[in-house]
Each structure stands twice: as structure tokens, then as C-alpha cells.
Amino acid sequence: MKFSSLKLTTPYLQLPALFYDRVAPTPLEKPFLISVSNDAAKLLGVDEDLSLDEELVDILNGKKLVGSEPFAMCYAGYQFAYFVPRLGDGRAINLGKVNGQNLQLKGSGLTLYSRQGDGRAVLRSSIREYLMSEAMHGLGISTSRALALIGSDTDVARERWEKGAIVLRLSPTWVRFGTFEYFNASGEHAKLEELADYVINESFSHLKSSEDRYLKMYAEIVRNTATTIAKWQGVGLNHGVMNTDNMSIDGRTIDYGPFAFLDDYEKDYVCNHTDRDGRYSFSNQPSIGHWNLAMLARALSPIVNYESALAVLDEVYGASYEEVYSEIMYAKMGLETEQENDKELFQWMLGALGSATIDYTDFFRKLSHFDGDKSELLDICVYRTSLEEWLESYEQRLEKETLSTSKRHEKMLGVNPKYILKNHILQEAIEKAEQKDFTMVNDLLKVALSPFEEHPDFEHLAARASMEAKNIKLSCSS
Ligand code: AMP
Ligand code: MG
Image (cartoon, rainbow, N blue to C red; front, side, top):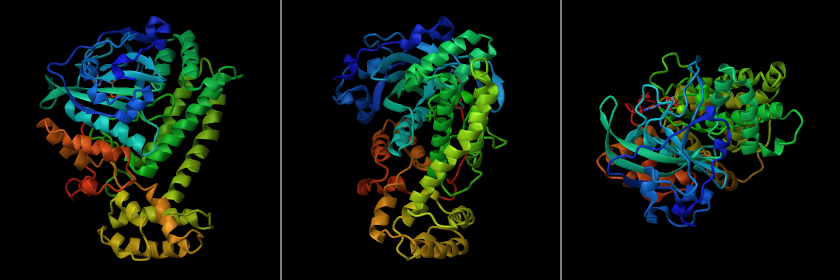
């Protein structure tokens, strides 16, 4: 099947007109293809190389696929704890659905919800979103996907003049916590039920004929959100903008803005330059997830008993989070049995990583080769003592395991990635792309999709950041 032969449907348009704005994409000038993810295309049942599809660029630039009826979605959201009653897709345009995936262009011009914005996305942020969508998938974390990226000659004003770009994104749902918040705040409570039924149909169809289905839907959203955030904490991802309009209703990671993976382990790292109070710091993410879910409970209160929803939140969130996080950390450390003082060993490790000043990803990758020789690990940290002491304890702890060293190494290498999208590397890829050299973007895509493998030709894409480039803050203007 060829991408341009797909036939779309538009189930969202069955909802009342208040839910969306029918709007056509505004094309970019002189569009050109930068990259495709044939891996993402498989989700659509497309098996022909996307880059050979002569219509691909035109479709990203607004040409209609059969059945497509473009529209922007309406939603609200708590932005940095302040409620904004109307946001919506200000620069995203939905094309329709095929094979359970909703296709969406990001950066394709003005919509009813653009407010002060220009409806555009610049090349820099589009490369970040494109690669990150695929990288998160490669890391096994629930995420929207990206099918293709085009650049253009269109000038877009940010802190400097930049060029417009468009990413074609895919997700099983684009409904956000903020979609419910919109209809609660606007007093359109009958619409909440229609939306909930739509969401159940789209994302939780096993609940369709359940009693108390809205409460059960909420419980699933709580569980999924906790699971995804536990995975962020495991891999060292700081999302950066956990506003409720950026929280997907099925708990997947969406809307990649000023995200960053930790370079050195710094638990209170804040990647978003505009987040002055550190609301969305790395260590706050689990509690912000809880806060956002509490806001969702409030938004659902006309159709779900508020106290019951809060009881579900308390019962499910912490337990799901702890279960997934602990499983991840055991696996990252190569521990298969549970022993008495493991919790202390974890906490000690995180404290030691903090005081050692050490790259989080590299630490675990090197730990995956640990055979008693501490020098490889100690050589990559600035302050050695705390980590050296911890490693001694870890070595003793390993004696309680039954797995052979080589088997342990093999398993650990499968959960501790070598390649994450380090910001300084992404920055280099962006600078090259701005000079029309897209090789690094495409190389990064390859490693992003198989981050646990060794890629001898791309060793440089796993390089640690220099002192100046470590844990930098990123601007939101994208
Ligand atoms: P974000 O923080 O990127 O998730 O964006 C928050 C809100 O602002 C969403 O409703 C976006 O659609 C909207 N937005 C962001 N950038 C632009 C832009 N350049 N033009 C129009 N709307 C935008
Ligand atoms: Mg957003």
C-alpha cells in the first residue's frame, strides 16, 4: 500500500460543531522533503518506501488524501497552573483517521484557535518533535509518532527569522485532558458525555458496555498516565510543558517542545527556560501528573462522581507509578530478585549519581558492562568517592543474584539505551539542517529507532555533552 492511496475517515466530525473548526492547511512556499519514518508508516499499513511517494510532500503541504476533511480541535488547559478556557489546535490541522491512527499536520497555518500565533512551526522545533516522537517509540515509551518532515522557504518570525516546516504526526487519539476541561468550563455539560463516549470508543473500547464506564475510563487514564511518567523518570526525560492541554487522554507522550533528557543526573533539572519556578522540573513530574489528573477529575465531575474519581486517583496513581518505576529501576540495575535493603540501595544510587556529577544515560550503559572493574564508571564522573562506595555495595548486592554476569549484561543492555536524543547532538543536527544538510537528522532517526543496539558508525551520536552544553535550558518559542 502506498501512502498517497490511503482513504481516511473523520469520526471526530460526527461530534457537534463546537468541538472543532473545519479549516484547510495553508501551504508553505517551496516545500521539500527532509525525512521519512517508514517504521511509523507501517502503522498505517503502508509498506512502500514513503520517500518514493511522489505525492508525499504535497500531502504534507495540504493536498487532500481521499476522505480527508481537515479540522482543528478545540480544547482548554491549565498552563503553569492557570486555567485558559480556550486554547485548541493553533497550528495543528487534523486530516482524518486510518488504521486506528489520526493524522495531523503541525505547522500548517492559522486556525480559529491560533490566538496571537502565526500557525507555523519552525524547522528547529519540527526536527525536535519529529525525531523525539520516533525516539520515544524506540525507547518503548507510549508516544505520538511522526511520519515525515518537510522544510520550506517560508519565513517565520521568532527571536530571529527562521524557516517554516511541517511534521505529519500520528496518534490513536488527539483528545487531551484540556478537551474535557473546555466543555466543563464552558458549561456545555451534555457535551462532556458525548466526548467521553467518543473517547471510550476510540481509546477504551473494552469499556463500551461497562457499568460506570466513565469512572472506569478515568481509572484507565490515571493508570496510563502514571505508567508513562514512571517511564520518563526511568529514562531521564524532562518533558518541560506538562500543561493539561499537553496531556493525552490515553496517557501517551505528546507535544514535544523544550524537552530534554538529563545529561548529568540532576534531580531538580528544569529544561524549560520559561519555567522560572521549576513547576515542571524532572523531580516534580510525578506529582504534576497527579495534579493534572485531579484537574481532569474536576472537569469530569458533571458526569463522574467527584469523590469517587478522587478515590480512584488516590488508589491507582501512586500504586501504578511505583510498580512501573520500581520494575524499571530493578531492570536498569540488573537485579532480578527482591532483597531487603533494595530501596535504600536505589536511593543511595540516585544520591551518589547526584553528587558524582555523572551522565545519567552513560552511567547505566556502563553499569550494563560492570564486572567488578570500577574504573570505567569512575572515569566518567567528576567526584568519585560517593559512587565508588555505592559500587562496592552494588557489587555485594549482585552476589545475591543467580543470573550469570554475561546474561545480566545482555539483559541490562536491552533496557539501558546507548542512544537518547542528547540536546547538544540535536542542536548540531539542527544547525546542519538549517544549512540544508539533513544527513545528521536521518542518522539520528536510525539510532532513535534502535537505541539499545550498538551502531559503530554512529558512535559520535552518543557523545556526552561538554561542560557548557550540559543540562542547558531551552526556549519555548517554536
Ligand atoms: P504548546 O505549549 O506548544 O503546546 O502550545 C500551547 C497552545 O498554543 C496550543 O493551543 C498551541 O496550538 C498554541 N500555539 C503554539 N504555538 C503557536 C503558533 N505559532 N501559532 C498558533 N498557535 C500556537
Ligand atoms: Mg500543545
